[in-house]
Length: 424
Image 1 (tube, helix red, strand yellow):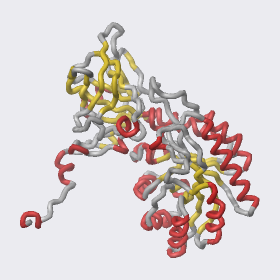
Image 2: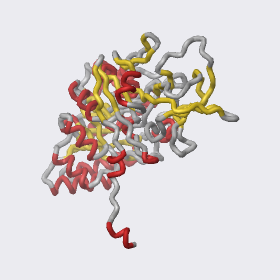
Image 3: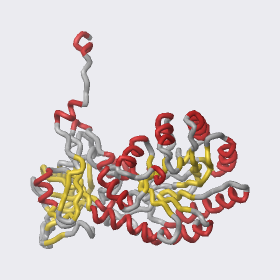
Image 4: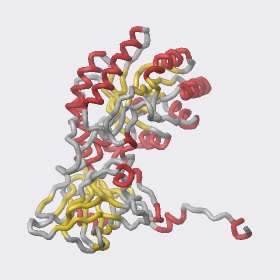
């Protein structure tokens, strides 16, 4: 919480009171610290400065264009998984030669768009994708630079919904089949084999799975090079975790992570592509919400707030812990209770936190959900016809609304009622 400190018992985002932003923007809203984003990105730059690298920010973590532009100005490339993400990266000025494209389901349209912009590399995840990519490259008279994404069958020891390197996961090409896939790629027209890719999961707090994966990747590169493949880069993916508060793991730093890369990958004399996302933006953001009611139940107490699972899905989807703290600091002698922090959506699973020790709260009190910068606003939706949550970016004492809240006319206006319904 370095960039979200308490000062005179009130919570700030850098140099701005969160309560002031709440008055101006309304709740709920996401608030990001520009200085935190840059500090976290620079940690990676400093950790990897002495080996050839491309830091390709994982756009899926938070795709707001203001954040992308901020990182682009600091030298970030982009890791994208859809045409929409690619368009966002290009729109903010990230050069195509610094963009890598992953994902198991690249469509013909998406492939053609990426080929037209001559991106850095496609991370190919199946033999059918190889064939499709080759056909489209030939049809468009393009040359597609590719890596094959290996599935090393490494357990990342993370939540089952965000592990991506096991044999049972949908991602990549099994290691046992990968060499034959490279042989096939080398024979297909329109493809230039130039790399090896791997990504084993997200929110990884133990370096051992990374090391196991890096050893496998390095051995595979040596094998390919011995057989004449001109492998110029290894894409090690992302996945380094962040601390989400009291129940989180002890998280290695980018420097600890880089030391493993330098031990196992750097001796190949090769460019390293890395794809951090959560570790850059996760703890650079909070979700600010207002108390609507306090409800005493027979078994549990409930703090009902105006943010909900549609605004912040992570606690419901991934069973994650995020600290929830009052914007006005709790006095040491305050009466404390245990309560669930829940939203107004019509689902029992609509909660931000369960069984938390909190002061007795009243309507209008402000709470901040910490560690909300990644996989927060980017996954938000309008379930229950709730307005899409806005985003605010703060730098020192200035702020900007970087995604406004929809109004109800806009929300309802997305629908179209065909004329023929009246005669149905």
